[in-house]
Length: 122
Ligand code: SF4
Ligand code: SF4
Picture 1 (tube, rainbow, N blue to C red):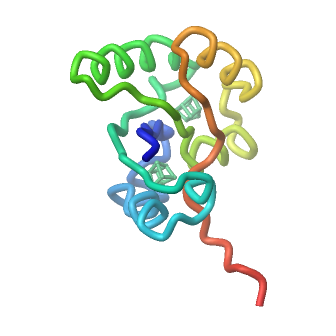
Picture 2: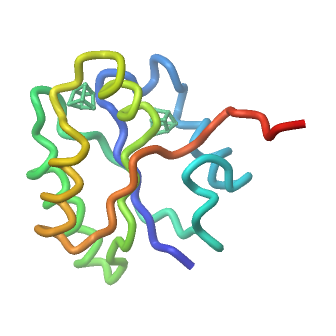
């Protein structure tokens, strides 16, 4: 059972994905980057900290809060919304830098992406 948290792009959530239903379905179906886990325990979801890149204080708050509850996060997924923001919408975050920094500072595994709508090959 993997204890995971999801960060979403503060600018996109509830515009492209309503109520994060896509990621909830992704966890249910184990599609996209959720396929790497046998079982998933979704501990928390929150935003990225907003532009221009306030992700470190956000993840500190997130990991402190979940630790205090006795539910440490093992894997932090940066939502498919964040992936799109980085690749196509001028997001100031650099994935390589963010991954290295967060893994070192907070001892979590960082994964880029969450759900996928891609259909498996016929
Ligand atoms: S990709 Fe996932 S985390 Fe991001 S807005 Fe959509 S459902 Fe929410
Ligand atoms: S564009 Fe990037 S930094 Fe800005 S809100 Fe979205 S994910 Fe966060």
